[in-house]
Length: 64
Picture 1: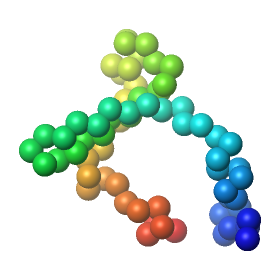
Picture 2: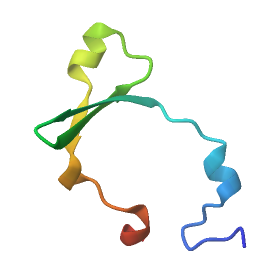
Picture 3: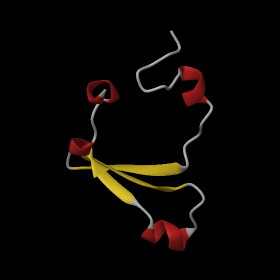
Picture 4: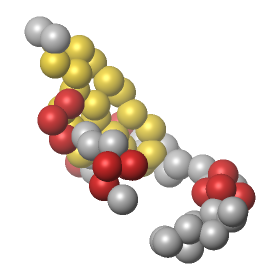
């Protein structure tokens, strides 16, 4: 039961922590999520980020 088609097991995925932090803001019924490195100082966070809106996200189950 630990095997998967991608070679990832629940045990291996739970040992990793995210290297990103995020801020989500909702305006006019649209959620906008901005992600940037956890260890980023203010200058780095201003240049190393990515923003996504609701249409950018898909279910992991659907993508598999």
